Image (cartoon, rainbow, N blue to C red; front, side):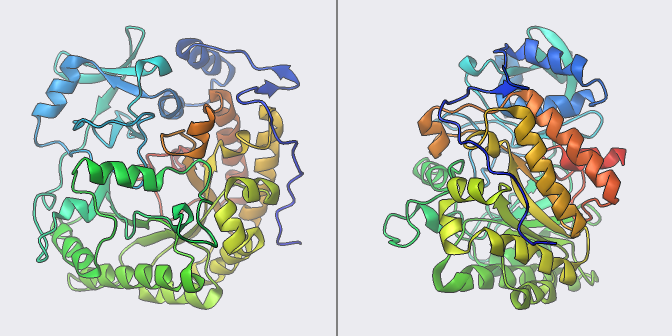
Length: 450
């Protein structure tokens, strides 16, 4: 079997947001109409999963009372930006908003703050509890996470540990080694100005630093070690440790590779010192040759993810021009398949941005889903889990500047159902990520139903 995913070429969309379904124009709907339409059409999709997708696309607002209550509760986890904004417009004021929240059934969701013109959902504070609402209707209870004990402590270099290791949900720590991607760099003659079209990493970093929010473009290995050692004092709390950041194609990605390898080794050392032979450490990074993948494993990683973003060479070349030039689509595919030999089936992920294919490649929802599922099946046949995140269009990205909007909710309904059916068919799920750890996309939530 060819190692190049056999996805058909699509006609590139020349009209923004002109989505169709089965050859007919897709109707423009309000948030409420769209949610109810998909609830009725896809009754087997759990309500909280549907909300998780829809709040990422439409966004969320607080009522004044809910905002004041959240801001006043200093026991709750404060917002710390990761590598993307997820706010749908630039905010120059200090924001007392969460990074994530949880529904009462355990479904984790990102808090994607949205302006009123996006027709967002609203979190209200009613009778001492937070609720997700829409048009005055109470939909689901919302729960926020308590601040970890290590958050307000500092490393020996003086860095707040919450700026070194941020938490997602209740059981995951995220380290971002470098919040800068060289595909944004104008001075890089080879790869500069070739950032992925949906990415806002560098504009977000610049905004956060300008606002003085403690944001760091780079973190140090020693700080990672000290933060992990302190976090592990909360015995039994942390089940996943995740590493992600920008690409660095210089010297055949050697610097990027060394940074991830050394930070994984530092965190692994902290685990060994408290009797944990192998911490569940998981990097999301550039594709590597098999020898360097082995080194990442030997340093202590338990799983490995390649940020391929979109399936299909034509779409990859257009959506990710820097990556296409630096390494190429075929190498991304080969690296993931080779990594399965090192980490084992279910421990290698294709990091996808669900919905990116609708931005530059398709008008028809059904065609986009069918072709993406064809690629996902190929990956599953080779032991690779098709995971990742979902598309939100943020300031600073090319898609935002072009005036694009996210695909309809039905796209995500169809894609989620199809991926779930394929995962069941091949009996392959992500061993490195659980539903309590994945705020960006429901692929891990669906694993509860396998």
